[in-house]
Amino acid sequence: MIPFLDLGAAYLELKSEIDTAIHRVLDSGWYILGPEVDAFEAEWADYCQANHAVGLANGLDALILALRALEVGEGDEVIVPSNTYIATWLAVSAVGATPVPVEPDPATHNIDPNRITRAITARTKVILPVHLYGQPVDLDPILVLAREHRLKVVEDAAQAHGARYKGRRIGSHGDIVCWSFYPGKNLGALGDGGAITTNDPTLADRIRVLRNYGSRVKYVNEVQGANSRLDPIQAAVLRAKLPHLDAWTDRRRAIAALYSEGLEGTGLILPHTPDWAEPAWHLYVMRSSDRDGLQKALSEAGVGTLIHYPIPPHMQAAYEGLAIPAEALPVARKLAREVLSLPIGPQLPQQDAARVSDIVKAIAQ
Ligand SMILES: *Cc1c(COP(=O)(O)O)cnc(C)c1O
Image (tube, rainbow, N blue to C red; front, side):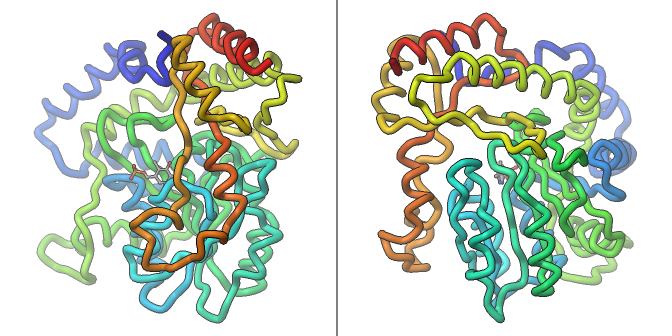
């Protein structure tokens, strides 16, 4: 059996470094914020080519606090991709604003900048693109639109650790960039974790205050904040892993290249990478008109796959209230029917990836 992802193997690869890091925190007697979180924030900002990083409890909170820092709330609209993990939409709803979906370019699965203008209204405050599957969004046209219409750009980079857009790391193109360190992400903690990066010192400061009860000085509360602090044990784990992230991304890229070469000519629609994009290869997502049949055959052949994502947010019971008609957003619905993610990860042996490729090819032909 070749699993979709083996998180235990990721821990074992760095077991001694991670165990040492965790014990450093346990021995320190400092269990909330403090030097370990400060150090990770500096290292993460540096890695992302951003001036500031703020460690948070998870990726959803990163999105919520980013929107709160930009004073997005009741009556405001935020432009989101029609195909994304539901967290992107939930953050918008959590601050009382309305998610306004825009369809993706089916070639890249990412929000189509050409469709955004039509979705902008007098209530629009923010454009919230997602670097889905670790493939960078075409940011320049979005940043131009934002400037023209006086909107802010918040990036959901929960799947894009280390990806580059036109040579520069994702991390400070938009006003605020939101990260998740959920265990399965490219840089994953051993529990929940998140962060924002930004070049704007005022926004960084606002989020720093918001994450800690709205407080800069203990028992002095400037705003109604949240409790959303990155755990120092997780910060220590992330610090142990960060020096390995680029090598891990290289291994992901090698697996993606092996799949794309092996599956050429099978009729499957393979990931398309524009020449300005250096993806993080969080997922390797292909499309098949008989996706369910292919997934079942792969499972019988011992290959674990997943679907990212089977139900678009507008079709979830959670969003019945938006009353988006069933026939709306056909691109998101079609992608949800056709996408299939193959095993990928730094700990997946190259020979297993080669086997996966051979098995998929045999089934698809
Ligand atoms: C994982 C993820 C999130 C949420 O991150 P959590 O840390 O699980 O809260 C948000 N958006 C996208 C695209 C994600 O993949």
